[in-house]
Length: 310
Image 1 (tube, rainbow, N blue to C red):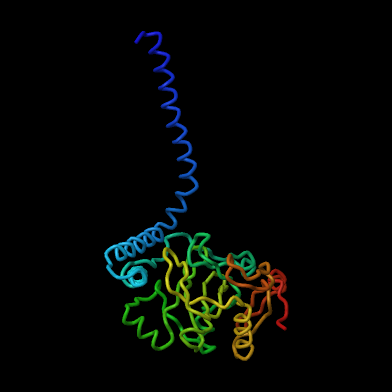
Image 2: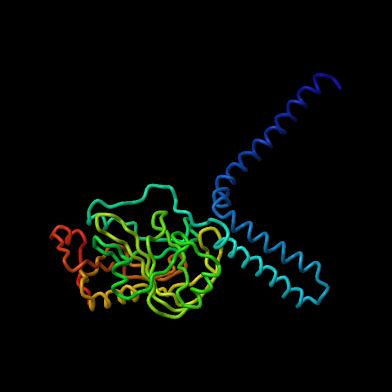
C-alpha cells in the first residue's frame, strides 16, 4: 500500500480507536462515581442477594419435581440462606463494634436544641430513621429514670456478650436483646422496655450527651418484619408509626413518679407525616424531664422553648 494512503488511514484509525476508549473511560468514570459508593455501602446486601438467588437457582435446576414443588424448594433454600446470614451476623461475626470516631458532647443544656434528633439503624438512605423525642436533664443516667419507672433493661449487641442460647432464653422471657440505633454514628448507652409481649412492647434507648443532658428515643413495637439493619436485611421488630403516643406514656409515668418532674414539651423539630421515608409520624415536640431538685435558670427555659403538657 502506498505510504500516502497508509499513513492518513492509520492516523484516522488510531484517533478513532483511542477516542472510543477515552469515551468509554469517561462514561465508566461517571457511572463509577454514581454507583460505586452505593455498591460499597450495600456490598453485604448485594452479596447476600446473589447467594440467595444462586442457591435458589441451583435447587431449581437439580430438583426433578414438578414446578410448584421446585419453586417451594427454591424458596426454602433462599430463606435458609437468609436465616443463616442473620445467625452469622448477630452471633458469630463481631459486627457491633463501637466506632472509633469523636462523639458529640454538649457543654451546656442549651446545646440540646441543636440536635441531632434522628437515630438510624445504618448510615444510608435505605435505613429508616426514628426520632429523638425525650430529653432528660439529670446528673444521673437515663437508666436510673427507667429503673425508677420499673422498666426492664435490655441487653444490646454492642455492650453485652449475647450467645444464641442466651438470646433464646431472653426470647422466652419476652425481653429479647434490642437492636441498635445510632446517633451520629454511636449506639445507645442503654436500652429499656416496659413489661409486654414479645410482639408488642414500649421500648426506649438513651444517649448520654454531656452537661447533664440525655437524649431518648421511645417507640412501641407492634409487629415483626424484615428491615434493613446496618449491613443486611434482618428479622426485627417494627415500630408503631405514632411515636408521640409512646412519648406521652413516658410523660404520664413521670408525672406519677417522685424524684422527677415533667418540665414540658419543646418544639425542637418540624412535624413529620408518616411515610416510607421516615417510618414514623410526630408533631415534632420533645418531652423534657428533669430531676425534682433541678432548677433551670430562665435563660435555659427560654432556649428550650418549653410548653406545658396538655
